Image (tube, rainbow, N blue to C red):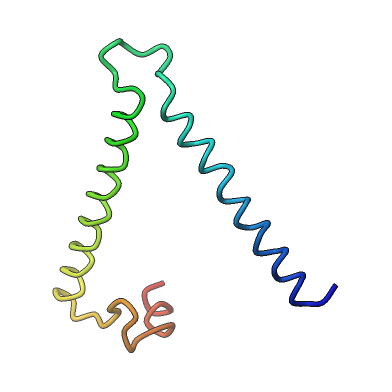
Length: 91
């Protein structure tokens, strides 16, 4: 095998390693909850709620991060000039 073929095989394996658990997680979300009251969300409504909360928290994180950058005069902007040195200073 050439290095290129090994790289492709590794890429396919890593993609499958992400897809399989993600699909299993989503399918488990669609199952009705066990041991919870009948008023608990189930199925597609539960999945939609989790996705909406995830998007809302991602937006809130972005807004808070941008606000913190302006407040403290940080220059770590997304893809900005600071790059890896900026990450090193953040850690």
